[in-house]
View 1 (cartoon, one colour):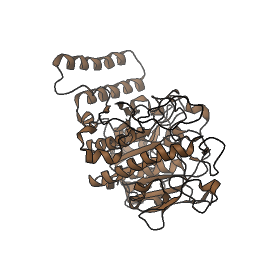
View 2 (cartoon, rainbow, N blue to C red; view 1 turned 120 degrees about the vertical axis):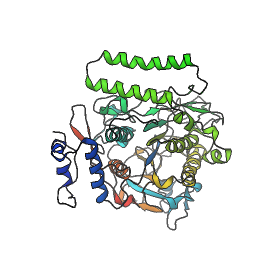
View 3 (cartoon, helix red, strand yellow; view 1 turned 60 degrees about the vertical axis):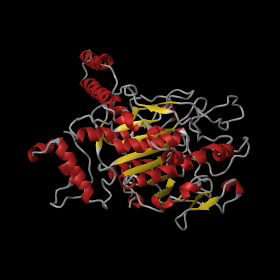
Length: 499
């Protein structure tokens, strides 16, 4: 019997939601799976504060490598210099809330934001898969094996899968799960790392990754003194002519010849041939879905058009910053406008930065001051204002996350100083789509080293995201053995974050 886990809360007729959501008993009620999911949504909405389903789409901004909480959203102006560091706090436009002085533009949109200062978990590792999936535990060995069978699905993949089921398997014209600016980790010197993949749901629910054609224009501060290469990192600056590409759609325009169009359609026949060679029903389903996605991308211009950011006037593009991160944020808004449900923007390692842009084990202050914080300040503040100007902020959830924080005490030994991995407390920021405005949730202690109030786990963020997207936080997905597990792991909806 297939069972969708639910809370024990009762509906208005006294039937428990958990009992009603046992698929084995739906036949007696005359309900199919689609109807049951709709009923589940209604049950979740009836017990919520009105925020359930408020978000029609989600934009995830992921700052890989882990920004320091002290130099972003949890400054400690009264702490000793070895804690506070070289940067000071600045007031925001919300009385009583201060953030790092190097984020002045974000300070002026703080009245649209919820800052969380009490995220915590036990794994101070670059565990993207832990931060963005329901996976209950994590080890360093997980990071280098993105296709390990024990991985749980990325939150965007879970949303895609659940929407696919709810809509009866119809593949949308615009994919529901798109990643920018390129496949995670694919431009660095390290092997591809684990994280934003569909795990045991299968590769059919991986994000559709764009790519980017363009050169970096700025040499960024080095990660360490040992680095000899000067890197023009596109996340620090790009030429305005740089372009995003969707797979299979970049050259399919209105002037595509019938011959070339026929050749492209013939590619899809290869999916049919491959299907005939496999026996597994799960593999067949994967090929079917990938075939439909491929045809959708080839035949529809909506994704291609959304990625044409050069159609935007300079007055729109320039506030984001002419950087890969900033222009990816702009492309994310355009993809949401085009109908994408879940768009992810990864601030990703580039070339030798296998340790990642934000992993400041050395050169901490030069990298933050001259590169990371100015780029982030421009892009994030512009995205919030741009969504608001287009009437999208109230219905678009914006998550800005990383895998952990950084040590409360500065290591002065490396050149430029350092803060190292720290997961006992760290910060994140959220906006739009049912999130509260102008508030801080949780508190760290006086050094920014431990949670002092309202501990929040990464799994709680996943559960709250599902809730805001209209998916009950206890909804389950099937693992490789067909067992149902909660998409959000052991996370719970955090109503403190909600409007």
